[in-house]
Image 1: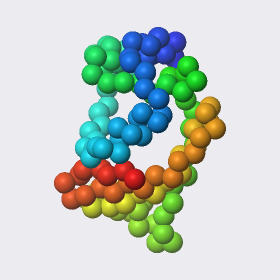
Image 2: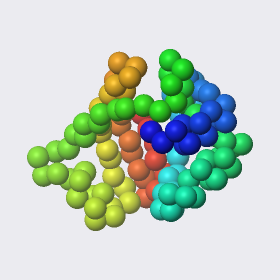
Image 3: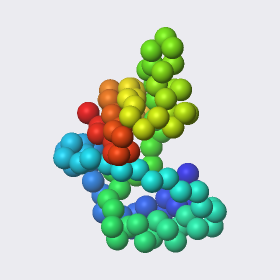
Image 4: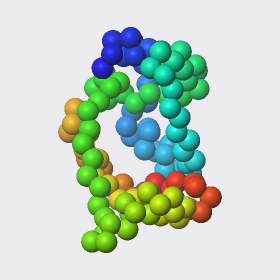
Amino acid sequence: MDPIINNTLHGFVPISLDELNAKAAMLERLDNKYILPAHSLRPALEVFATHFDVLEIGGKRAFGYATTYFDDPDLRGYFDHHQGRRKRCKVRMRNYLDAGLSYLEVKLKDKRQVTIKK
């Protein structure tokens, strides 16, 4: 990871994986994704640090992970996503390599584009 970004992450308040999962269990989430130039990332992170926590496991705030997505034989989940279907489901196994932890996640997105994570 870029050392400047890594240093910027230390401006965030840390949160453990258990705390993060407990908070997430109480939330319905609406995702917005943005593309920004690389030079804008550090200033954006500095602003985000006043509003968000950062996951910290074993003193680390940047992690490697591997994800396996599950779908039906017709690849319905894949095609629903790429066709912009509002109501859909995603099932994945996320392995946090540095922590040796794995989670099975089921995400349901409703017609309002709100994500419910189980």
